[in-house]
Image 1 (cartoon, helix red, strand yellow):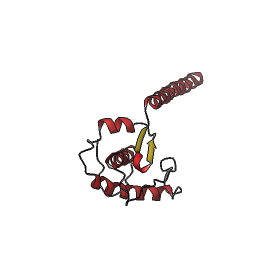
Image 2 (cartoon, one colour; image 1 turned 90 degrees about the vertical axis):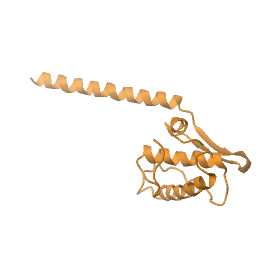
Image 3 (cartoon, one colour; image 1 turned 135 degrees about the vertical axis):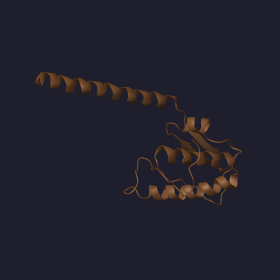
Length: 143
């Protein structure tokens, strides 16, 4: 009976181990396929590169078209999201420092252009869904 229990436990660990290994391989494959999203405005010499797995697909499949929201709407929302994001970066003891790694230097008086504001806005929507967080009192869009 003891040998059967040991064999069962070992077999269960082997199955769990194999299952975990497949998930890691799938994640590694997804990482290789996922292309970074660059948010840039050449005239302002401003660039953000997003390397968050799944964002590229989210941007291409779930995000509404760029013309859906006005640049002013996106700027207003991004300003709120950036302030909250940066507060969380500055408080690593309260918030997961693996998520909130970098300060975003977004200045509300600068017009970064529609493309930059659009991609940044949709990154915040993606991150709020993926990490189950709220960066403002607004409803999370998409999906």
